Length: 276
Image (cartoon, rainbow, N blue to C red; front, side, top):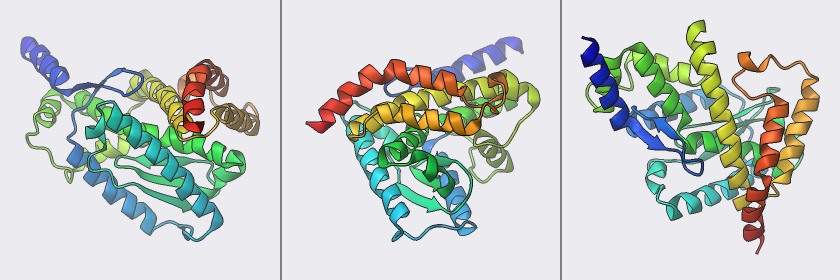
């Protein structure tokens, strides 16, 4: 029995491994793209139907679409020029500004993006917003949601994960798939998984999205130095009240800023090229 489980695990990882653009990190991907996109589009529509979506004629909403469009173009140019165009198949980009005091934004698989109005006082300008959108879009490009779901499937049973990996018995309407999808996008799981695997891995994904987002905003012609300014404003707004890093799904503000500063020289090359 143990031998069978080991073989199954090896098959699953052999079938489901791929590399993240730019960073080259190996990641697990078991959920078919069609299922991810179907669940994403359904959840996105349900969210918009129950939220205060700001009219597209609003100045701030226009800015979200304008900056988002430039980030999208930069992403598509890079992906199509570097052999990653398949990752964009089925994308239906959509940007919406939602009236809310939440200081947040997110992007679901397939380019479904929401920016909460509460974050705009901290972005302050288009480059600050590009920092946020570049980061959130990078989660979708790096397929972090699929990776989290894949790990959730493995954690819930190798046989089920193997079925997903081979496309057998997968249903995006099944209660289990829906539950794992929700967990991958923020629903808290068991504490042992949350603190032992989920949160550390989430921090890794957040740092990776920072990296990709910095490059994409630079490619879109936004000064990557503004990313540092944005996160400094966020750190100041937090007033040192952020939870201990090991209990958070995001890197500490200090670590995030330090990591971005190390990446600035590389990002500046793309920024200089975009300005020519």
